[in-house]
Length: 415
Image 1 (cartoon, one colour):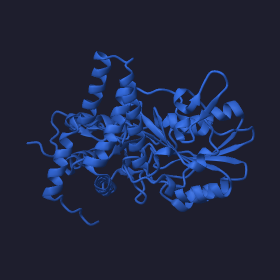
Image 2 (image 1 turned 120 degrees about the vertical axis):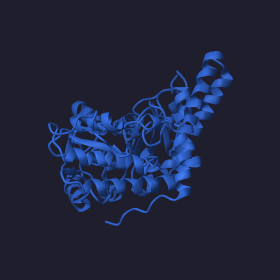
Image 3 (image 1 turned 120 degrees about the horizontal axis):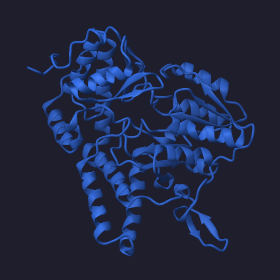
Image 4 (image 1 turned 90 degrees about the horizontal axis):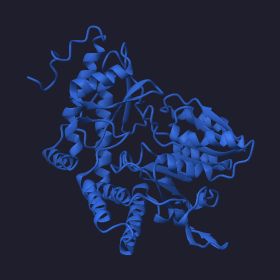
């Protein structure tokens, strides 16, 4: 293994300035962006400004509503830039799950239709399929793809499963369980050749790795605001390509979905993906969503943060795989920024508890694979990773019964 190059002084200075704009990083070693990322201070300030306006001026002001519509336009444009699509391809949502429901439920399912997915999906991705199985009697096939890192195995499974009754393939871009990057383009080519739509859960990809929806061949691609894009909860977007819009109808509708509408029988949905926007949005949150993406795009820089996130993830993977007694579930190839691992002799919950109590590491357990998951951010420092990984090595060298008491354990950096 070639040791990573030490960070340059310029890189360290820039990182320190950027970290200072993310106050939550001071609360602990932040390794759970895969659930919710640290919010930029600039985002919180913008949201507070909107909330203060609504409190002091009110919510019925016409000028305020016009301003709100401009913020919606800003949010769509910000999401489009991250996903490398045209703004007409973007519908604003309230979560990845919201977007996945809109896409899956937009298909005119009939009894006997099939959907193909994997055994590694998040409930937000497969949940809509269960609804359609219950309501319409569709068949859902769950493929065993292992950890997702063997792309030949993955493609073989999809090739065997997709047939002429398959209406949709529903997959993650990055598996929430093992962190593997899926071969979405190759799967999409198989699906499209047999007439199936491709609906992608991008929750662990958008803001973590480069995303090009058209390049991936996805017909619909759902993302959240609160994870790697560092926005507020209750926000998200659904990208639906022009080809996808021809086959995915609206499954809910309200004022936002129509270019024109009355109560006497005249209605025309937007030709753009705005046709999927069935409800209103919290003004402060949608402003924060746009501001966070803008901060990442213009202040942090997407290429720099993608490169640094990948480099830090590889460093953590190299160290974890070298620890005797640690089993890393994340494959060596096709990594994003999630690392899942197990420590032999320890439950995942016990490992998470030790990391939190001894080094204030904020991580999570993925029950689907009974593993601890680290979300490595572009903002994660070498020192933070060393501190966490040194403790993992100490845990692997002990059992829960032989581990020194927390009050007497000397950790890296302590006197």
